[in-house]
Image 1: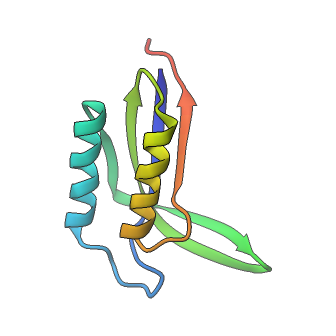
Image 2: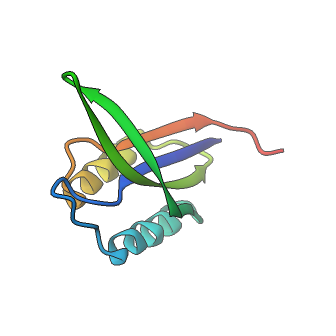
Amino acid sequence: MRLLQILLPTHDNDGRPFPAASFAAVRAELTDACGGVTAYTRAPATGLWDEGGEVVRDDIVIFEAMVDELDAGWWAGYRSTLEERFRQDEIVMRALPMERI
């Protein structure tokens, strides 16, 4: 089993917030694809990284879903879709091994 996490920005690169409908669409898509989703959208997390000596900041929301089998091709395509939709060079998506207890 894998825990999939998707980190999405709350604002575009010009500082404009993404509409709530953008995140609702991701919730619906992940529910359809995985049978359920958890979305952490109320208190955005802050991501910081060094980009050539300049610290860049993003406020993000996190979506999580569990899958029994990882279809890497499907997830790579979905990541590309999200990068286009959210106008990002890269969306962080990760799959972590997990065990239900």
